[in-house]
Length: 390
Length: 168
Ligand SMILES: C[S@@+](CC[C@H](N)C(=O)[O-])C[C@H]1O[C@@H](n2cnc3c(N)ncnc32)[C@H](O)[C@@H]1O
Image (cartoon, rainbow over all chains, first blue to last red; front, side, top):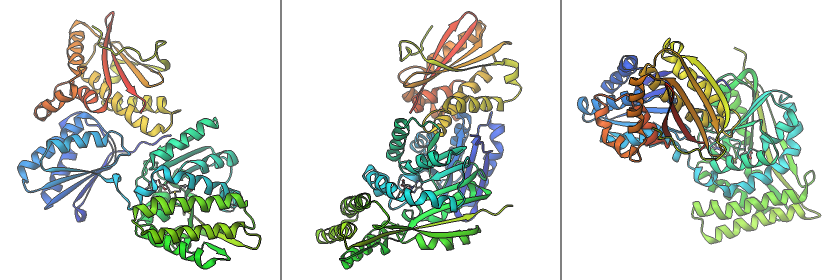
């Protein structure tokens, strides 16, 4: 897809930061001079640390690279006390290589690969322990979501972006059901994307594009999608608004942004409801200690409204053991049990007795799902809003 | 001289695209280098998994080679870019008219770049590049930092730069 961004450079004096974006491919020093002037001005204006933000710089030729190195060398002379912090993202494949090299060359320069640990829950999310959870969830969610998506404006032959696409199964289902003109999934987990690729290959699907990317700094062009989705993702990211802003940016005016998120504290099972409720409340606290808000669901209405979206629609996916395949529902809870008592408890060093009690609650939830007299729910909130026409 | 790496598959790469441009046309504007690099990269990467990442890498590398050619100023004639693919690599061949002087220069520059110690050389020469960067500095960086292979072939009045890029 067309995706060219012109070069831009901005100095944010408040943050002591210069942000470079787009494509920087000067023919020589004269061509680079305006950029150099910007950088010199910033270096003169700040004290302590000057941040050079390269997160959105997609292209840099070697001439530009050498010119940046010249600037760094000049800084060491002119401002011996000034440190330069180069902030780079692994989403730009050449960036860690080149800037890592620069960091090793100059004593005044530190390189920070910002997306190595950019949100507190990253370590427990971006690994393949979560794959069975995502897989089983989609199995039962899709049967409800499929119809509901139409009510939120998804139609055939649209341009669709699924941001934080996980293992890509939703994109595959949407692809089959809605025959999009174009669909792209973006995620920051390489294991998930590998999984997505494998599935697409097995199903003989070649028309879904997957991208390694950061939802808070997408390289997708502005105003270019009819329908932008982000499912079960804002709740695990510590700064959901920064993802939401990007979703709105890439959405066409008149297009819709569609979100789903949970209200984990309201997961319910009867009988043995006390045990079930304790476990989910505990799980919410554990997740909170990793910067996640697993009760984000009901807050979406305000978030979408605050973001200036119109015609905000919100409802609940009514997943219960009354309207959902019992075995599939039970498998979802079992995958949570595995993940929360394993990965999540280990990462947050839960004492054994807490882990045991957590486990009991999940098992009691499964009991309620399977029991002839039992009733169990997993409420997921769905919200969407329209981007205003300019 | 041929310092080009042996083709990874015995049958050679399967062709994807061939593009011809006049040398004069390229000289019209410096920005032609990046336009061409972006276009070719996007075309070649389009049916791959994560085409954006591959586009970014290919465009970065092709642009560096095109800028080198732009500065090397071959005589009148055509530049031909041929791109093909094997299971593991994208292989781009850039053919340009080369008189004796240019051929000698290509031999020199590409010879210096495609040595096994490229990384050590790049590190050793980097500070000096800040005063004056030699013409092949950008090519050396491709080999030294980015794991790309560069080679040269000569064929009847033409020089062929061969760029071998791993898919991932
Ligand atoms: C709970 S999973 C949900 C995945 C998928 N949407 C689904 O419903 O199955 C959350 C996903 O968000 C991704 N994610 C979180 N923060 C991200 C960011 N800043 N950029 C890209 N992906 C991100 C994680 O890698 C993970 O795949």
